[in-house]
Length: 481
Image 1 (cartoon, rainbow, N blue to C red):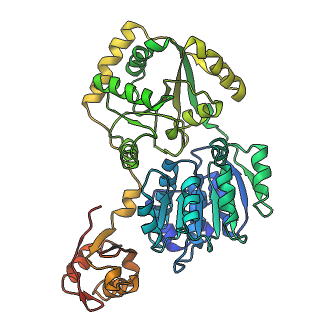
Image 2 (cartoon, helix red, strand yellow):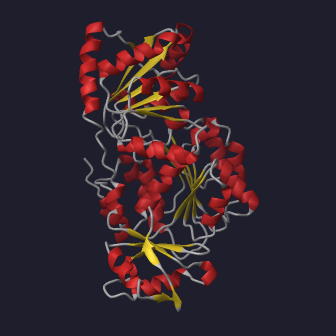
């Protein structure tokens, strides 16, 4: 057994501090192989299943190599979905927290003006979907001249979703002397051919899981008429007594209808689909990750990009029409070495789709036994007791990083000619505070925000009541998170 530790990579103390607070112990296999190669500036093509720790595999070494003083973005990460973009941005922000790395996520359904404001600040890492990144390039609101690292995540999905022309357009706008990293669960030949044009002697890494996630997932199917699905769902819930479930539907309308039926039965649930406002989608995802409700009813947008600990069950209320979607859906459970259960409802007309999925991926999907009336009644009592006990809130390791960080609002910004150096200098002059305690500074037209590290927020807040910045009287208060 390899006893390699994160300390062995020669990483900066600020990065190691973040890694420790995030609860990372020893590197996963993909991290062991990828981190040293990125530190040595090698182009890489990585085939790795979901849940293998690949985001940290590229975020850790890239955060290590970012030059803080450079004002233009140095890292561009392309992802197929908004959810994945937000998740990767959060990973970069957490890993780079003590190094003061600033990140922005760019995707559709959020006002572009909000994103343009973000990009006027010093941003080290940009994570986004191809459509919105291409839009910013055309508007000249995203300057890519200093990009040193291009990461293409879930590349196979990018191909499937028809993003490839936009990806080519973006790559053509990037500097030639950059590192290119390609991550994908599957590596189709056409993708290899395409990206080899953009890469310099790429090293191919295939992470073959010793215990594949699919092997850890009990897969069952139930043949059921469409109008009997909800009745069967109740029986399954009462007999399986799940802790955390994602239920997949084919359309937004099906999601909304199922959520209404489930809420009528008293199930703690929420829906997630592309027709919702982005702020609502973010809120639902966060609450599900925290374990505030058991059932997330969703379309395939949630099949990638939602990394939630200990999802015990996946239920395909509607069977997916695309074979790959089945794998991505069930891959939400059985993660990080845990076991899981995937249940698929199939109408008689759809049974051939299930057969094709099983044959294509060589899967053993067994027919489930419909629970008896007695099993349902016994399970119902136990499950209702579980609901009465209330939700079990899950640990969020990122809170350990943010615990000692305070965000302070300052009532002066660009219009008063305030610069980051002015704020940093004033705060560093406070007794008991040094430059290392000043985190990311965000300056808007009429106000500014500053992160104070090391639990010194109260000291800084108190001292700022009697200080000026650049000779100007300011008001300082704790920022609303």
